[in-house]
Length: 192
Image (cartoon, rainbow, N blue to C red; front, side, top):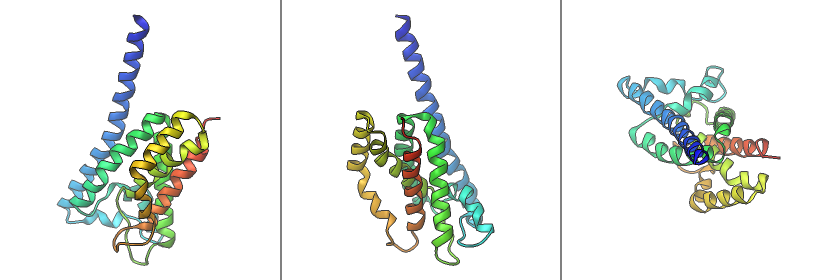
């Protein structure tokens, strides 16, 4: 009886930690968007600006800034779902995968983005989560990891097309960089 209660408490604590971490990140997106909206878009200047020294700060700040309500909403749902799946695999990996995705997305957008463009939004991190979840099973080769990778690929694998140049105003460079960052995180975090 005591073991069941202990297991239940641990599970409840883990779920609460996951909800606070992922939910807190989304709350930060929405809070920053409120400031962005009230300031008339003033925060956009803190995004990734390709090949400028000041534009490097966007690697850290850009994922929290969104240009419109539709942009914010389109990033909220996949961030919640994929971010939670990253935490479900192993909550200790969430921060490392997030940072690898931010770094990959920001650096690639900074290196190859169009001159004078500004790259903002959490989609690079979302693509990082996607890359991590799709390839973690390949690197770990455990049954559960492979099944999660297959499920994620089946449900969201079509998003990978977002890493290709396409719609104007969408940072495919950030998507591709985030995806690469997530894949590299999957490789480095594989359980031996």
